[in-house]
Amino acid sequence: MVDGGTDELRRNVNTEPFEELSIYSDAPHHEIRQGFFWGKRGKDGNQPVEFKPLKTLDTDHIEAIIQTQKNQPRWRIEIFKAELAFRKKSS
Image (cartoon, rainbow, N blue to C red; front, side):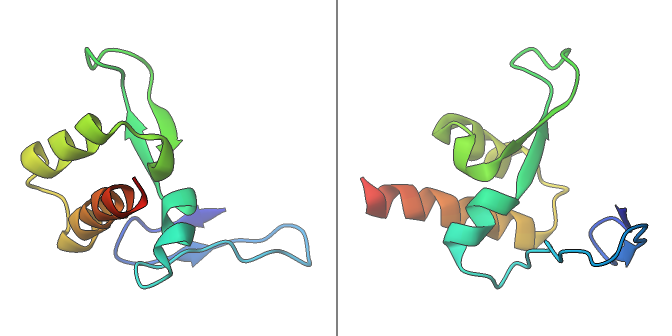
């Protein structure tokens, strides 16, 4: 179990040994894009929340997040910008 939001991390383990899967914002981008998930509710915003890895989000969706989600922490927006730069460099 992991809890704590974006400012702290609390864990509880029921089975040992356990595997640490946390990814931090200073990790290599190829790891972040696989391990960073974004919750989305579909194009109309009325679907059940579905969490998708960053690497699977449409470029238009990422651009819209950057433009409209002004309440997001700076580190999160920087991850989205890094993904756009990664895609531009890879194409």
